[in-house]
Length: 604
Image 1 (spheres, rainbow, N blue to C red):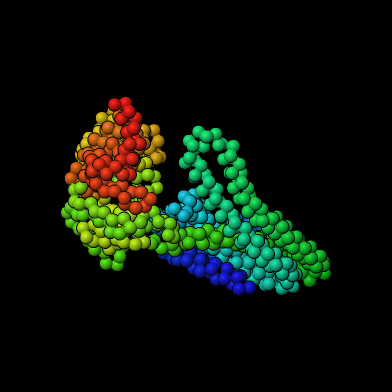
Image 2: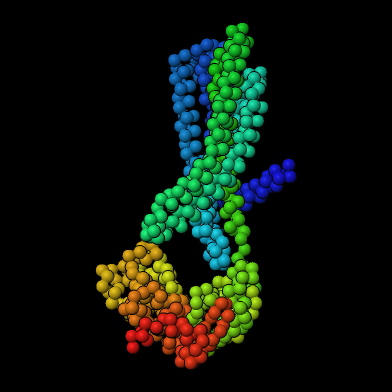
């Protein structure tokens, strides 16, 4: 019982938050409700007109339900029936127009609300630290902003307001039925308990099924994103059959999750249909007997059959709309879970200004672990003086790339301090901190667009001349000029169609065009051929000139001219000095040098 109360309380809070997204468009919703009232009221008119046509012209009987209307009808049967037909046609057309307007307005409200939800979700994703993405697959996050938001749109467009419409239709129809015959109304409502019990059971089953369905959809999206991105590896190692087997497992989970919902639909609609048929059978038997004894007019009998057909349809629609509401609630819970995730790396309440001019970078007894106390860096201390180029080398997993992530504050350290110009980076606004750094990664990321757009990267202050100058300084200009569109050359997703070296040079031009005070080069030449490496090395020389630079490298040839070289080993800083000084020490760096240049030394 307590668990059920918690679930209902959670659903209530989720619904209230969803209502907050609709609140800015309350006036549009009010317009839709006005049209909805008109549509619901017109649902009652059809059977009443049928009753008037039968009791006044086809099988005359005493009594009237709309005296103001019947007084204006012609006395002759033909003329009167024609008038009623015209009134019926006007009612149908008015109902069509009202229904269209209501649907259009609510669809528009749904799209506006979803625009706000997607904007908030994307804004939150951009605020969260990289550790969050380490824990959550990309496909799951994509599902939050796509499929889950679409479920909310369906609720706004076809859920809450249309549920109100179904309730209004029921109220109007019941009022009309009670005014015609309270006894026949009670007879139709005798099956209501069966319908209510079936609806409650249906709700519980579908509610649980919808949560499992949303989880299964997220798993499918995660699987597809991972395998499509790694399709070259999948085909290279002939793992297509294994990939299909794993996808079948994930896909089957989705099918099984849908099974309970299918079962619920399978029995719910027949139960409601069976209950309605029983009600019609009782109506036909008892009502027919009353008509035969002249206790009931034939028009009332026919009108009740029409109302009976209409009164069960809103009940079924309410169950369908409730299913939409449940699916939307399950999706909203996942979206709000994302929106409620507070970023752990935020700007302080009163951030300090970033120090102006050339500044020293200092790592002071830094300890860091991605998880618990599995330390990646242990008591690391070093400084980079203004204008100095410092390189970091070491075996894989020694913590080289972690240095750059910590310096840019993608992660927060557990102990120690990192300072720029004597200011702890935790006292700076992360956006202000990163704005002063240019970064070139081992695997450069290009966005869909153009080469010029990827260099400028949305910074309006960078002119076309600056873009061209940056491209020339990193040996990219000749390649760009060989393209038909030049800097307007289309770049596909992740830079498909460009070589690794070309993408790397674009990344260098991007860093140079933004003219940063500090520069980070992370394995910038590890994935290119020798000729391209020479071009990249020349670009690196131009990039680091006059800038405070941290260079991460495996290839020692790229860092021999660095002012100082840091040697990391098992998370600790073991050696520190110039290339010649480290070779003279005959320590870890000397061993790395021997491993890389053994063949050349033997050749000499």
